[in-house]
Amino acid sequence: MPVPKKRQSASRQGKRRATWKLKAINLSICPDCHAPVLPHRACPSCGTYQGRKVLEIEAKEAPKEKATETKKSKGKEK
Image (cartoon, rainbow, N blue to C red; front, side, top):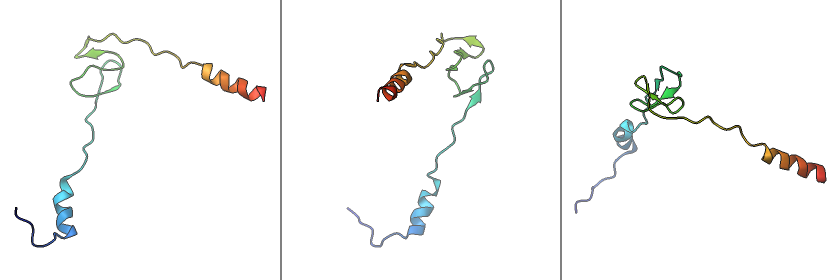
């Protein structure tokens, strides 16, 4: 198998890798709720796609307060 005779310089390596960059995500705005949405997908916040309802979205629950209550009660016992 052929092997390179000489080492490539760092500048040549950098020139070759100059096109290895990340692209920004193309986001569009949902016309109903104005949330950012990936193109050609249903809106995760309101469930619409092309002006019609395609997903049933449940309301998000409020965070549970049990974790904060247990921390407060532990501090009082000491």
